[in-house]
Image (cartoon, rainbow, N blue to C red):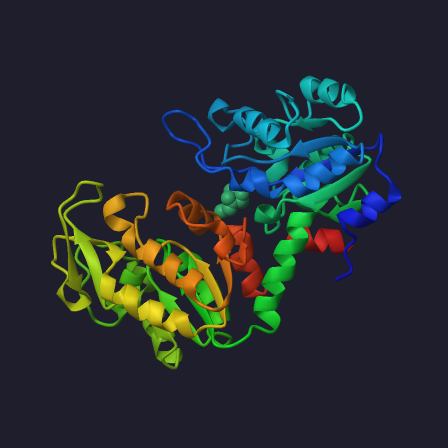
Length: 399
Ligand code: 3PG
Ligand code: MG
């Protein structure tokens, strides 16, 4: 890879220099309290930030949070993230109340060597995500004015052609941070030389989100295990009735076609947990997939499916997992996701967990993160990497 790294930048010396770091601090927040419910993405960027602080840089961090519409929206403020980042770094983080305005300018100007500032949400500015090159460029000019060098450590956003990801590196000396490097290193072993059998587990709600990656993976993997909400469209494609389960009617034909072309590599659930409603206290039972009642919906894979998937995983030498197997946030429908996660940790395999939701599930279920070889911080980004797509944020670092 012809990409310069944080170590190259540190070797040049960064003491007293302003270093603009693009991080992905897009963490889940509790809808009621606004508290950070999973700080994994904040912790993931600490190695890069810590190294810059130690080297005496003036560190200016920027990130998006959620999907505000190009204008300030208090529910998406990064302020709580500044607090948590400060706790984890063990030093206060100076928070700018805007991204490139007066507050940002004075906050950056006030930094002394080894101090850290966090700018307000990048997406409070229309230029960040604009499709118009000139509008994005104008915003990138304002951001680039805050740095003498740029570090991309926002792996979760490298698939976005956004100002802070794509246009800023064209304006400043640029390097990849520790997290981006590690993510790319791990994912490249999956695409180039996975030790076999290579087993992929996919879940989550929509087939349409995963279609491209399924297409790309089918020739490469030895087995593809499908659970989560998206399994019902596949079951329908097999001619089964799925009650009121999540169903993408317009994908049924596509799924039928994938099943036909998969040479038996795709494994689907044989039993599921069905409920009367999408609610934590809904009445529920386990049924065979050919016996889903017409008025009930499937919210998790069943125990026999977990056993079958676990048996396939126990043979694997390489595992990639993206997407929960059921509604793990509700205790009654968490057993499938937990069972698969445990089977992955028990396998004697190189295991990679991809994505926001599956990574959050690992932590929410209280599983030991260190029993996986790698937990990616990027959901969409890791899938697009595995699809073989060019990632704008990585391409920008290569130039
Ligand atoms: C994510 O959570 O997937 C990343 O932070 C990217 O966010 P986005 O999908 O809103 O661009
Ligand atoms: Mg996303």
